[in-house]
Image 1 (cartoon, one colour):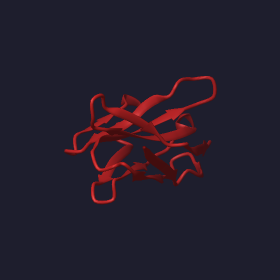
Image 2 (tube, helix red, strand yellow; image 1 turned 135 degrees about the vertical axis):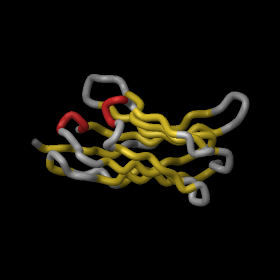
Image 3 (cartoon, rainbow, N blue to C red; image 1 turned 180 degrees about the horizontal axis):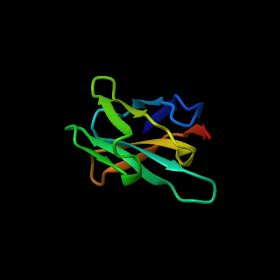
Length: 118
């Protein structure tokens, strides 16, 4: 089992910045990738950004140029730097970790609320 704990969610104004953190613990010695998803009420979670163990990144079109995902392999942690935030970025943000195995396992954190006021 892997436990993921997000932090850093807050209320910010339009154009502001936040940095989300995701700390992992448990059986986290073989993390293939980590990512961030977000969800708004009544809608499915959508991928915001992901990063592989090798450092390859992927971003949703809506956040390219504004958000940056990074990781700390030694701490098995991931971060999401969010700049130039917009009201439409308001959501609960979830951290994920994919653990290598047969089959690979995907774990979710409990989420952290980000609210951007106009």
